[in-house]
Image 1 (cartoon, rainbow, N blue to C red):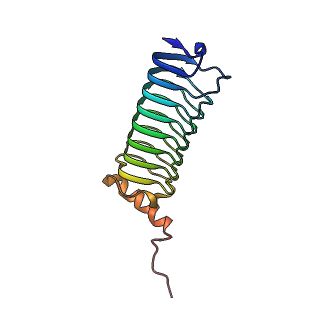
Image 2: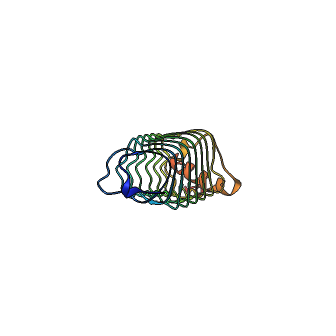
Image 3: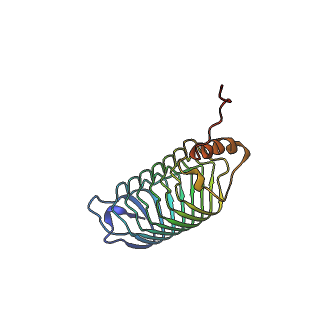
Length: 201
């Protein structure tokens, strides 16, 4: 086990990391076969990081700058990533369970084989992102911005879609019966279609 306060540089492998990343640390983290357990990277400036075969549990990455980073075979559980900047990042074979990702910026990111389960993702920014083989299962996607998103084999089953922006970009996508009415209402509103009574002459 290694405390983040004691790391000499950002290249780490086959180690468990805990503790708090120092405020002055300002370089990408290149992690391979690493476990982050109870670690804090709040507000970290680590854009361009590369994480391969990494497990993240009970850790806090809120507000971290991870733009243009790459994540391969990463598992995340019971962790907080709220407000993190992940624009133009790349995700391959990633799974997040019971995590908080409110207001995360994923604009222009690309993802393949990614699954979010029971995650809080209200206000997430997905504009211009590309997802191939993605599932949001039982997540809160309230007020998410999906404008211009590109989807292949996408599933939204059980997720909350209130206040969704750019819903017309969500295709092709699979939803369950309970979501149909809410999503249809959003799409009609975006198209300027109103359901009203016939006007009186």
